[in-house]
Image (cartoon, rainbow over all chains, first blue to last red; front, side, top):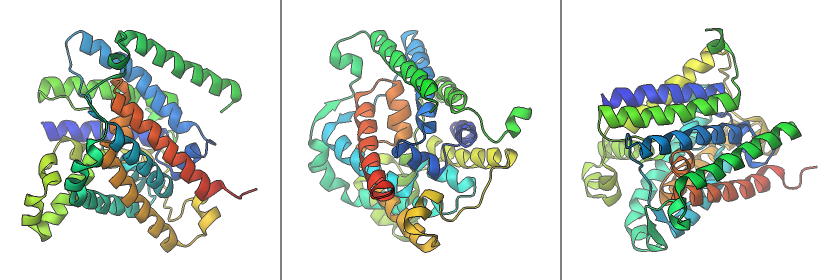
Length: 174
Length: 179
């Protein structure tokens, strides 16, 4: 059942990624060059719906959150490194697989590279665990918790920022 | 029905539907398999790498701390990625936007039309990207979508760094010195 759910969820996700055209190298790199806002429209729309729904259901006790722990050092260094690789490859892990599916065969090299990258990380992990992963551990913490704000205040701010950005895109014809 | 054969949907609409999908996934997995599954992609690359290595050196995989921590198995996320492949394939065939491409146009302008050059770049980019993403603990799906949806600090820091690294590199690679 777990596997079937994964397959179906992935199928719908891949379908939507392809329909929004965010799987394309041109859209990914186009956004990084600030020339094409497709990806940000897509991501922020998902976040807008998701943040409201997830917190509503969590407040009602129907679901539980699964927060990833914060490691400030690793997230900054790893995040910047990922950014470098993302711009060169033109795809992130999920979109590389989708891009291959829509015929962008060079994405296969990205996928192979990513598997090698994963293997290298696994080899170096004991070293990382003793160094970079020790820097700035803050645990499983959320933005409302750091600022001691009710989460709906932060959600309100997120919604406001996203909608303002969308209306700015409309005005500028982006 | 006609809608499914369209080449492109508005990114706002498709994105909002991904938001609903993310919520639905958490609800369904909570009730059916009793563990919430938030969307994510990069751990699957670790597990697939481990499964491949296992064919060559099973003892090595068994003794690797990271592989053991991530559990080498076929799980929800691996099937999620497989589903993603078939979903994108189906959509591209229905919308007639499936297109064989060996070198993307922005790359071509800068590095020429040779497939081998693109292949090397794609490979190196992939290595760096996945190494970075595992160090950061998640990708634009796991940190960017699922993390920010939950207002996680980790997701916010990671996504901002993805963008800083990505924008600087993209500028230097594809834009700098161009008229």
